[in-house]
Amino acid sequence: MTTPPIRNVTATVVAIEDLTPDIARVFLRLDEPVVRLAGQYLEILDGDNAYAFSIASPPASGNDLELHVRHGADNPSSLRVMSLLRDSARVMLRLPQGDCVLREEPALPLLFIAGSTGFSQVKAFVEHAIAQGWTVPVTVCWGARSAAELYLHTLPQQWARQHAKGGRSKGKARL
Image 1: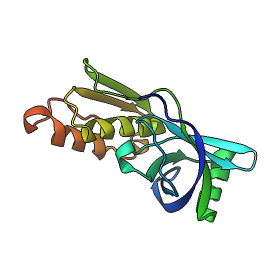
Image 2 (image 1 turned 60 degrees about the vertical axis):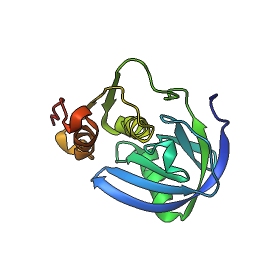
Image 3 (image 1 turned 90 degrees about the vertical axis):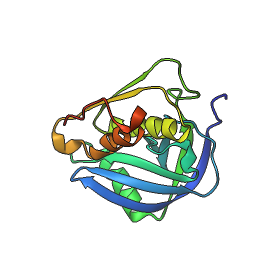
């Protein structure tokens, strides 16, 4: 499959969940279907400004998208994005973008390394592999400045328990 074309579409802000004091999980619903691949990102458009975020949900989620947004005083543009998302019922997006994607099951094991909210792209990759029934071994390494920033730390543990060959995980989760 070739990389899908980039389009501008509107989306409804469905929910915002605070995962930590400075990381939010944002749920959006597209007004129309957009073909995308696991690992792609979108831009939230606000006038002349565009803010890029990895899509944390796999393509199988259809029109429902998940984003992980780090926001804080040290990043004024992130505060503008969160204000836009919290104050607007609808937002304009440009998607899908990016070439770092999973198109088909690889022959070799997968190793994903993520820092902080970079986990969002890894989440999309792993959930896509699970949805496709892939059997290739997957290892996820996720680091952050503090244990509290590993905001969905039980999710990789759940993947390991539920999808390890033979029903048992050979890997160890460390936080």
